[in-house]
Length: 202
Image (cartoon, rainbow, N blue to C red):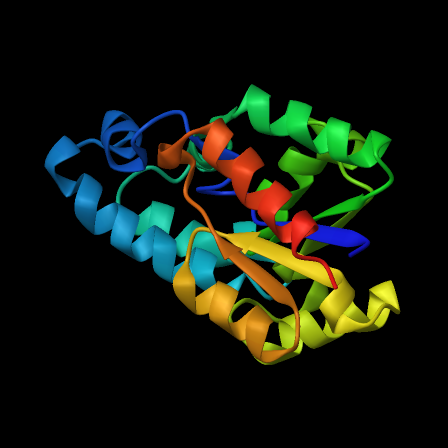
């Protein structure tokens, strides 16, 4: 096994705030927070596979909820992210051991850009595979096939770690090794899971 793909949310990072609570502080009527979040997520989901145009698509939502000038504040809420330091340390250890560590994450272009630059994922990972730039998202089989094509490696030499079973199962269906893990299990569980994948190589 040469390459390990890591999901981001739920594996390496989590939101630092409740989006609903944070959105409520921006709205004229805080009780509209859940409705606003539903509308926001509907728009954002379309941009998990598109690399431009999110702000223009969101503007009518902000207008409808009475916060037309709050675009930067709304998007900033989604970028308030806590990274699990122990997980990043493990990544660096794996890379020192000769493994290629890549990010494989469903993200909007705003969040992807923030993660790559401000969270320094461009430095922490050998390569980043964001759904918005690939044009397809997990658990679509094409997502994994595109990554395997870019890696130019046999599928059985690639491992994939994600908190969602449907994503792990899709990777396994493409011939990859898979591990389901959620950060609530703690960093030692992640280390143990990765080491088990390595030990069972071949």
